[in-house]
Length: 395
Image (tube, rainbow, N blue to C red; front, side, top):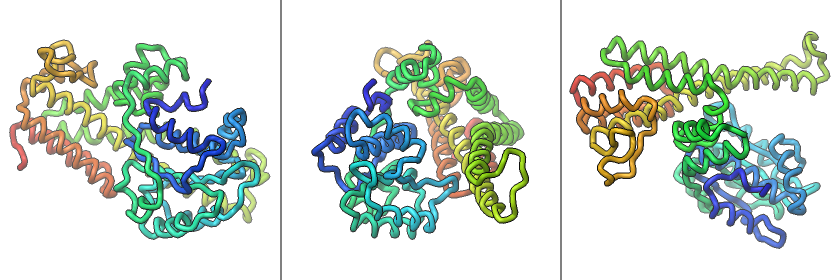
C-alpha cells in the first residue's frame, strides 16, 4: 500500500510533501498545514514527520508507527487536552528542538492545534522557529493561517488542505476499515467529509444514534419549553459522547502510567509517586472538559447541516427526492434520513427565517469557543430557533 494512501483528497499537498521529504530534497525548516476540521491535517503532519525522519522509503512505515506512538527519539509533539497550550509546555518543547537527530535524517516537532497557543506561548515558539538548528523541522497544524501570529506565519511554508469529497472519505472507510459501502456513504455524508467523525459514525452505532437524536430533537422544538428540554437533552448527548471517548483512554493511560512507574495492578500508589498520578488525573480532567466542548461543537455542526438543508429547501433548491430541484442546482440533502420533516419545515419557513437560524447556530459556535458554558450556549440557541419558528426575526 502507498505510504500516503490514507491521506484523502489532498493530491497536491501530498506531492509537495513527498518532494520535500524525498532523499536530496530541501524541506523548509517550518511548515504550517491548515485546513478545515476533518480534512486530515494532523494525519498528514505525522506522515510527513515519518517521511522526513526515515532514511529510506522502505523504513517509512516502521518510523510512522513509532511517530504515532510518540516513541521515536527524533520526534516530539506538542498538543493539549485543555483549551489552550500553556507557555510551560511551549518552553519544554523548545528545549527538545536543539537535540540533534539520533537515528533519522531530521528531528521533527509537530504542533497540533497550534491555534490553541496563547500569545505568550506563540512568542516562545517564534524564537525557536526564527533560529532553528540545522536538522530540526517544525510542523504546525491549524484550521487557518489567521489563527496564528503573523510573525509565525511569515516564517513557515504554508500548505492549505481542502475538504475531501464524501465519496473519497467513503472509499477510505471501505478500503482501510472494511466498512460496508452503503454505511460508509451514509457516514461520510452525515459527517460532511470529516474523516475522523465519518469513521466513528460508521463503526459506532451509538454515535450514529446520538446524531439521529440530535436532528430529531431539533426538528421537534416548537415552544420555549421544547427548546429548553432539547438543549438539556443535547448536553446529555454531548456528555455521553465525551464519556464514551475518554473513559477507555483514561483507563489505558492510568494502567500505562502505573506500569511505567513500577506499580503492580491493584497495588496502592506510594506517597512519593502520588503527585505524578495526580498530574495525570488533572490532565484527564482537562481533557474531559475539552471533550464536552468539542462534543457540543460537533452537535452545533450537525445542527448547521440540518438548517442548511432547511434553508435550501425553503429556497426551492432541493427536490422532492432530496436531490437538486429542476435540474438547475447540484444541492443535495445532507440529512436525507430526515427528509420529510426537513421539507415540511422548509415549506413552513421563509428563507429569511431559515437564514436567521443558520446565523444563530454560527453565532453559537463562536460563543462556545469564547468559553461560555455549553448549556447556556444551547439554551440561547434554541430560544432563538423557537423565535424564528414563530416568525419573530432578529435584525
